[in-house]
Length: 150
Image 1 (cartoon, one colour):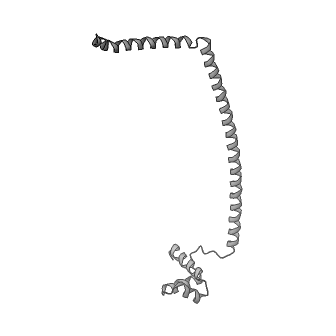
Image 2 (image 1 turned 60 degrees about the vertical axis):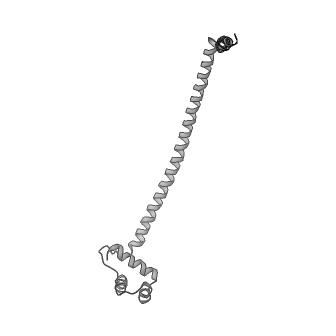
Image 3 (image 1 turned 45 degrees about the vertical axis):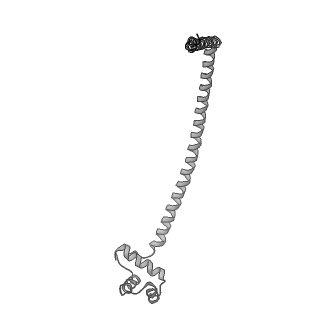
């Protein structure tokens, strides 16, 4: 009899567990809101969501107007800077326009002398001393020679 009880015990526990689950499930089902309560909750949530979406749309429009205003300000500033730069370029062209143009490829005499001394193998300090120039000026002129291919 003891062995029979041990084999039936798992089945009895399973049946008790199923009965308990059915009982708890019925109790929860009876407590669940029905009809208009559920509909009212859904409608309330829908209205809250719609209000949140409208608020988001307002915020996005305000952000867009703010960003547009900032961009317009920056564009005006950049336009003014470009205009100032153009005026400075014209002024620089006027100032440098007074000097004779070397567009015809003619090399100034000082440059020719510096090139000749460099071709003889003299360093920039010695060339500067002989031409009464600065070593930086000699280096610049020699650099121009390399870029122009003269």
